[in-house]
Length: 213
Image (cartoon, rainbow, N blue to C red):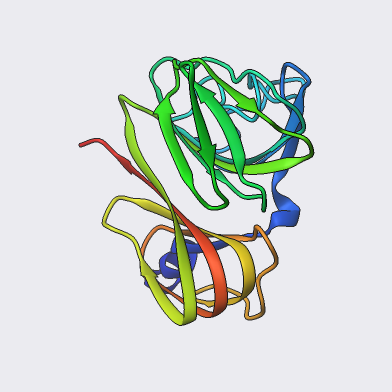
């Protein structure tokens, strides 16, 4: 039984399996990597019950997704949600947060209150961003860029869920239950326990969610 538990503790989430949907306002698309509870944003008609641009579902404790911004658009308001956004495209991403301009370089993260007035600015072509959104009353979260220079071990604190999102370069991952082989861009490893071994020369994102005690 312990072996089966170890295998379930580290799971690969291929980018090809990320669930895609249009934003409710029709201004873009997003791909859901994971959410808690799973499928929390899926309505009975098979459409995502999300609002805005790849924003949080209407009820989950947290969600991790990659959104595509094609133009300058207004983000939806989500009181009670803490949001972190990482620019993934080479040109970065411009934002306006409560009237203040913010220019994100590639891999840079902006954190803001879900109730803030936020919009993208200066977008001239499809731009990707990685979003971590957590219910403030139930979870806390973190999102940061990381580097694999030859090899790197990743662990997760007790009770936490850690995600390793492959962003750029060459990367392989080894761990209980993982099939060997190179990762593709935006493939993600979900880590509930144990140790994940990464090898290669790559840029990764490290997202983590932890429930409040």
